[in-house]
Amino acid sequence: MIKNNLLFILLILFAGCENNHPSSVKEVHHKPVTEYCQKSKKPDLEIYIDLTGACTGKATILMIVQITPDSRPSYFIQIGKEEEYTVEDIKFYDKTGKRINYQKDHRKYLLSAGDNKEIFIRYSVKPGGPGRHGRQGNISDTFASFDGRIFILPDKNYKINSAKIQFTVPDGWKIINPHRKEGNWYYPDSSGKDLIYDSLVKSPVACGPFSETKKRFGSTDVYTYSCSEWPISYRKKITEKSFKLYEYFYKHTGFDPGFPYIICWTHLSYDREKVLGGIWSNGMCYEMEEDTLRNWELFAHRLGHAVNEYEPTGMAIRDREDFWFTEGWASYIEIESTSSVKFTDNVTGWEKIYDHYIRTLEKYPHYDYPLGKEYEVENPDSIEFIHYTKAPLVMKMLDVEMKRSSGKTMDQFMKYACKKYGNFREVFPFKEELEKFSGTSFEYFYENIIRKKGTVRPVWRN
Image 1 (cartoon, helix red, strand yellow):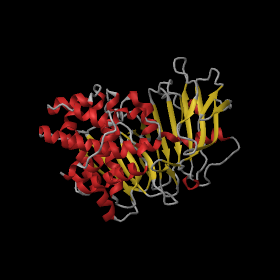
Image 2 (spheres, rainbow, N blue to C red):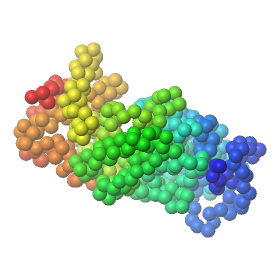
Image 3 (cartoon, one colour):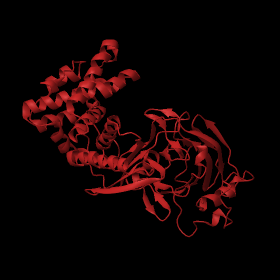
Image 4 (tube, helix red, strand yellow):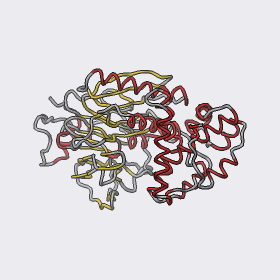
């Protein structure tokens, strides 16, 4: 039987004559919405996510936004791209149920809100459009995974100081997210109250029949989830490998956010495509029907960005000529970490990426660009080549050069740098700190490899 909660009361109140709630859900008659929550202060944003119609590929969302003279949105915006997240049947209401008119400008909704102190938003959303790394989210009768791109939120000038989320899911489905839980409510403030908006938008969410395993690293509880119907031996294998690779980052970079971190492995989509549920500093969710090396490399890359980019755990690079480091190190650490934990061997990984570098430049020499001017590149193919092929190879060259000149390693340097600059403690002067840590000048290297196109060499062969 499907669970009942306040969501259906609200949907019934605002649905009018539509009566489109699932037939297995019994109507509930209760006090008017205006009487609910009067006993306690209402949050700025209250969200109800109904997945009882998951077989249609859609979720029904109801949101209640508090409006004050000091916190009045200029507009509302659909967070997900329209080609990736399809929004239908959107309605804006006041607390009496009266419709609020709006004008739509691409993903923006411009409202004639008047002096309303509350705005109610109701709509359905279907994730799963094609995008980078496969289908962007999924809702089906098997499982659901998505992030905050399913939401229509006030513009960022509207300060969200408090928010809470409630889910309604089919019987037997687990609700998975990294948010703080109290009763039936989830509060997206674990990463800090200043990041509630970002946490709403970027945190991974999954629902379905998943099995859970928890392990603590430092001050962080890490949860892994895998589909319950998968063989126990397979679930155990990918759970152990998840913890093993996470532990590498904990030990080698000191990554320890201090709030829950979730790792959720899902099925492929209905049409056997990859599914990206969400990635941020508090977790990741994507498909793992097969134990492939590429999936673990992506796991490492995404954890790498939690270390060097994502708020609140990452870093802020000071100098523009070092911006290449963000993607360069994340792609470099794919190979270094997976080989360190024996998922593959180090040489094979570097030979593969070097071969791709050579073949790409033979065919598309115009893709090449000085890494120090990465921020100027606009050609998407060139960006792809620089970020995921050239930059990690140059990072490997830096590692070998540092070992040769000082006996120190990039691994040691990053542990030092993360302790000093992680969690956005202060801006990170990458080259300056690299020279200070190693006692070696890298000016010659920068002049020839970073500020010019340079030539990548297979230094691991020496």
